[in-house]
Image (cartoon, rainbow, N blue to C red; front, side, top):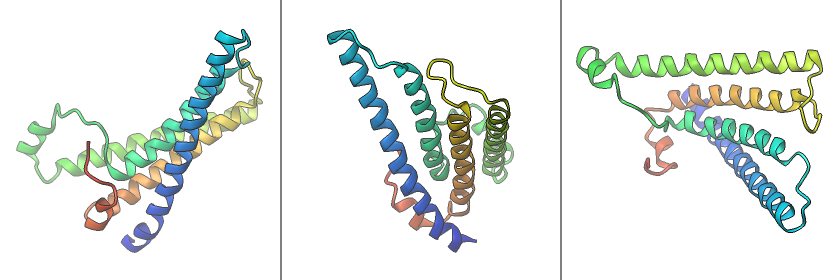
Length: 169
């Protein structure tokens, strides 16, 4: 299983890094054009706020896959000292299990939302775009995030996996 994870995960992460960078650039460019149009030409980009919201959601879930795979979340260690004193070997298993369960629930609920948006023919408020496009993309990215997280856990003991990603901030 480690060999499959070692072959697949770097490719997934590379694609997601590029997608996230493109989405972030589009969000920046759209904001720039909207501000210039609004203040210099009194002609803002119609629906820019809604498009930026969509790009933001997709950027977040694209980046979440990278964070999940590398287990590089921002952490608050409220219970860690207590858990490490009482159950030191079980603590990382509990944390990772909780993280996978929560990501599974998020992916499941987003998928349900995307299916409902499709069945109801829901449209966005301003641009009247099919909501299923955005909801489905975010749901798909959340599923990819879950898969990346599981593959990252499989490779968590592999020193070569962590070497490509630099030191944590």
